[in-house]
Length: 117
Image (cartoon, rainbow, N blue to C red):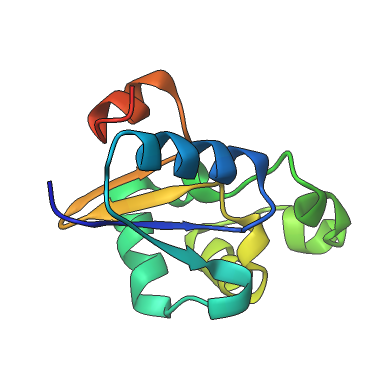
């Protein structure tokens, strides 16, 4: 299996759990801290194209709750992309890429897909 790219935030519990499981499974991982390293608009747009913006926006996190209501209300694709680029912590974590394959989150099914079940 070729190296995968795991996008997230270093102090996120789910990201740490995914990184540990992938490491234990011997999967080569390149970690990208979206807060420190940032994200390219083209990459976020590719994720939205593959998964849908609704799947990527983390509405349960602190960053979402701290947004003014006028930014949260009536969210659409373009506004969601702009908010995720401005506030990378709004993106559900982890986002994992390998070639054209992209997943978001860390569930038993996703762990199995990446060989870390």
